[in-house]
Length: 348
Image 1: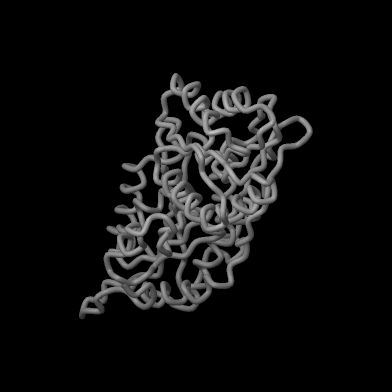
Image 2: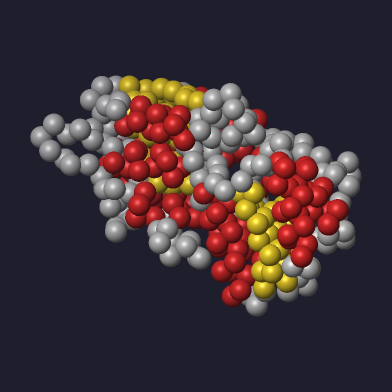
């Protein structure tokens, strides 16, 4: 598969060219659930970037259309709504770009749809590794399944989940945790993180001695914590999206493994102001770029690409792929709770 180049059929009707003077940029983001607060910051950043350009780029007036990626449930994203959003953009002859998804693997649903339509997709923060490269530990989960046209049309703002995993391995090494345990959630985010962690840890000479998949049953938490403890790990890694079960899970692990350090991927930051239970200090790795800046940079990239490519979707995609190499915010940093045990809420 060629992960670069132009899209579209280029036939006599030129379906890849916007015909009028108005083009639409779609933005898919959660309005409910654990990612709603971060999504609000992302959208504010998108609007700011558009306002700074006077709502115009490439000779076009740019209209931003926001679409909900969640219902009133508690999940970070809803697959049916994400697919509906992508189809809405794909079916719109005036659509020139799609901003989404925000995080935790939702782009795996929308990207094949927008790619098939030849529309640029820019994610403000979805780090799913397999969107752009074959993730370690999952040899059959390559990016080709997301690009039915065989041409890449996707750019992300921020690091991949693999970058987070590599930082987690560094933390395990620094802690002298040659034996570690981990728990992951059942979604694509957690499963892909788990596979990458095992591969990178083994490469570094570390040994995973216990692993558990959390499938959403709160009653299963005590058994999960006991199973992790049976491996007698020197550290525990949490690979899941924070939610209602997070605090009970952390408390159960701390009870079974007192004094054992806890590390987590960025899904732990999904709940703004999450207060940890009395337990060993937890270190969480995640992107340096905050949500509002990520939204701003995502929209700015889109507008720069439109300024270069004009009405031609194919040229817009090509311009974005070139410019995407210079995006800021690719650093992974360690987040630690403050004196009150709370992680800093999402901000500008």
